[in-house]
Length: 265
Image (cartoon, rainbow, N blue to C red; front, side, top):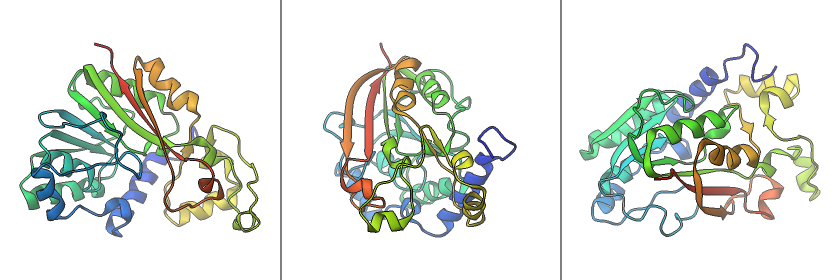
């Protein structure tokens, strides 16, 4: 099976995230009313990586038109709305979007929630936003370059794209826990990586049967070079460590990467 076969990865990943939202997973757990109240009082934080945003990336959201791209779940978008931004959250999962809607209704927030594919932002006009906030999520599509092109289109001149993604090194290693126990990192997959191509038939079938989202590991040429190709200028770069290592490589290198890119004015 490949990403270009008849397998509908988008529908599968939508269903996977709908299921995660129903299970109250870490990324589907809405923020509390206390967090919203604090954001209204000027004490707020949102995350591209596990740690805080670098200073200067998004210090003053008041009045900004912000698109929270593929980041539903009742967490980032409501906080930014409470902090004074005009927020639209866009996501493939309707159940994830429902979490944002619930927080907005509970706490009286003005927030728009739109369902769709992150590679197609045709629901929005050119230059509709001042900021696109895009935390780790583009591993759920096989090609990120359309995402960057659409982000560039919907941003105003001088607007910023704040995005994050995994260091592609996390996709290279064999995931057999026996190697991790031995302290061995065994390269097994070449980049770019795709579950739909690189997992053997049995492993892929098992993953699909468990209802897990399929993922794609993109090269830095696609992640960073793709932003430059779309017309952005890179204004900031940030690395962060995985606080709860899942893979052996997480113990040795920062596996979260974030970029601050600007659409030239």
